[in-house]
Image 1 (cartoon, rainbow, N blue to C red):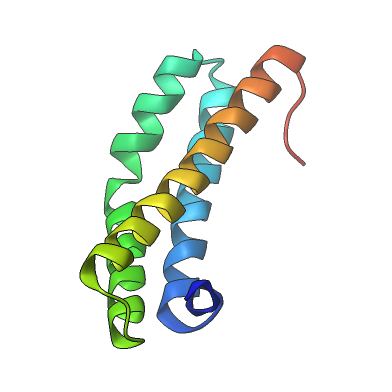
Image 2 (spheres, one colour):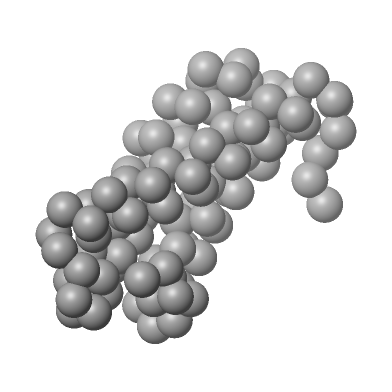
Length: 101
């Protein structure tokens, strides 16, 4: 029921988590932190927003009729996909020497 990720509290929670990751990306690039340091900073610094995003997905998915296991799987996948994309983006910027606009 991926369409639920596009609306309501789920979309707001995703935006908040993405913003936190983006803030971590920018501040770690500014300080020229290693990729491992960024990973730690993003994981710990954005843990609450990741949990809120996960919980919003779980609530929306179970309300839409998904089983708890299906909702858990989707929530894990969505949180990890967003975090993984930011990890990849950080490494790109770090290697390339460029910065986000």
